[in-house]
Amino acid sequence: MLLSHARTLCDARSALAVLADRAVDSDASSAYEHVLITLDVIHGDEAPAIDTYGLPEEHDELLAIASTALERLKSHGIDDLHVELLLAMLDDATELDVI
Image (cartoon, rainbow, N blue to C red; front, side, top):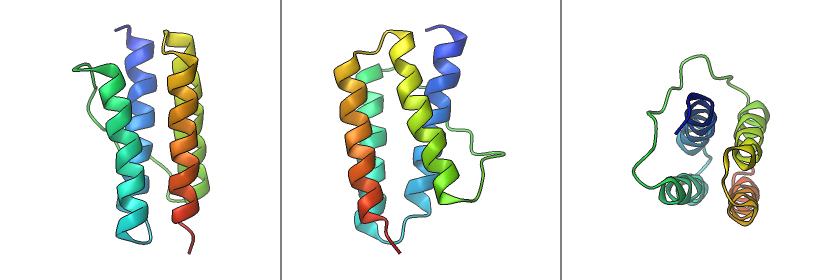
């Protein structure tokens, strides 16, 4: 895995982890964690550590970081269908995370 791919994956994983931690209830948190687990399964054993330092507090900003990072995975050889599945799962999790 190239450094740019690892950084993109780290961004996605980190934003998803923070979204799961800050979700309004356990259902929304589990949905975000499911996206994270699916992302890890797609990458096998190659998953960089989660780095939450410097991530924004706002839900919408975290969501934008996660979405953008997931989209960028296409340029690193991740199948378009996998990325679209992850984005759909992220949308479903976001719908559960309504205050």
